[in-house]
Each structure stands twice: as structure tokens, then as C-alpha cells.
Length: 264
Figure 1 (spheres, one colour):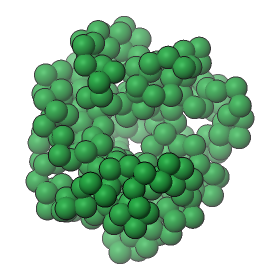
Figure 2: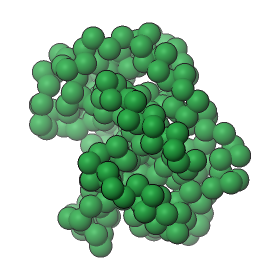
Figure 3: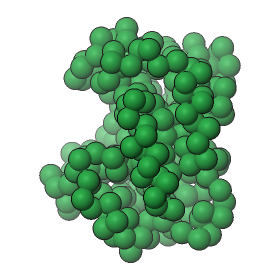
């Protein structure tokens, strides 16, 4: 079984098609998926999707693009919302200097708020990092020194330095369809050097569909393709990589019941 550790089933792209998306995922061997929050103020929509579908879990958090809109979100609020039984992560939160949609100070403030919630709850923080490697390394180092917390560098497309710093701090690294793109040789070289016990896979659907669907709407079923490419990068079989990434997912996303895998 494969797990899509990061998708966005609440986005309009899936409004009329969630049962079909889940059915196609199951047919492709994808047994579980986590639909990731981008706005705390819309958590009710995320929670409703998770509640309606046994194979779907969720997170709670504010994407860095929306950081300025939700600076009033407190650590206590994140902790309270994360108590929902199918909420298994905090985030996504982080830094995005590529688009700079929100002021960088607001992004950092939001990230530190989410780190505090992850530290209190023990739930993994789903980290978004784009074109912000130096600041991300600095913040993760400062915050880990203040108290460890579980975390994942999602949809990894950053430099080797951030990967190595994250792994040294105990973080996991997740790869998306970007790994399959023809021009992603450098990213595949980085993935080759991530310890196998820190690897996860994801879609970030509806974005970043892997080859051969690049440019089309992505969906959780396609994570199987990324898993296959990652297996080739690491020199193992697709079945072994599926088992490895699922075991890693369950170790990091420890709130997911183990019988969820048995019944998926």
C-alpha cells in the first residue's frame, strides 16, 4: 500500500469528484491520503471531508501564502482544533519567497506559531519551503534548540543544504511529482542521499502531476508513479519503496491508527 501524505481535496478542482478520486486512488494501491489545510478558518471544510471518507485524514494550519490573513491564529487554537480524531498533523506552514504573497515577517511568525503547536501536540509539522533555504535552516535550528518537534519537509524541491540540515535535525523529507520531471536530475541526486527511513511520497494534488500526466490535474492515484521513480532512484523495487514510505508515514504520523492500514 502507498500513502499520499499531502493532497488538497478541499480545493475546487475536486468539488464534484472526491468519491471518484478516492476510488481511483484505491485502484492504484493508494490506501490512505492526508488532505492538508491551507487556512485554519476553513478547517470545517477539511474536517468534513475527512469525516466522510475513511481513507482520508487531515491537518490544520495556515499556508505561508495566507500567513498575513491568519496572524490571529493562536497556538492554543491550533492545539484545540488538532484534537479532532482524524487530524493527524499541523500545517502546512512555512516560508515561500518565490511568490512572496505574504510579508516575510508574517510567514516567519506563522511558522513559529505552528512549530509551537507541533511541539505541544507531538503531531508532525508539515513544512512548506520554497526559495527560502537559509531562513528555513536558521529557524529550524533555533526552534529545535528550544525544544524538539516532529516535522516533514513536504514537496521537497530545495537545495541539498536544507535537506541535510533537516535530516540532521530529525526531519523527514517528502517528494512529489517534481521528482519525475525530466529536468529534475539534481533533485533525484538529493533524493538518492536521503536516508531511506526518512522518505515519504505525496502528490500535492491538484498540483504537480508526475510524468506522464504533467500539466494535467494531479490526484492521489498518481503518487504511485512518484513512488516508482523514487524506487528507481534508490535502487529498490516499487513494492519495497511503497512499504518503506508507508512505514515511515506511520512512524511520523503516529496518530493514524495502525488498523487504518490493515483495512485500507
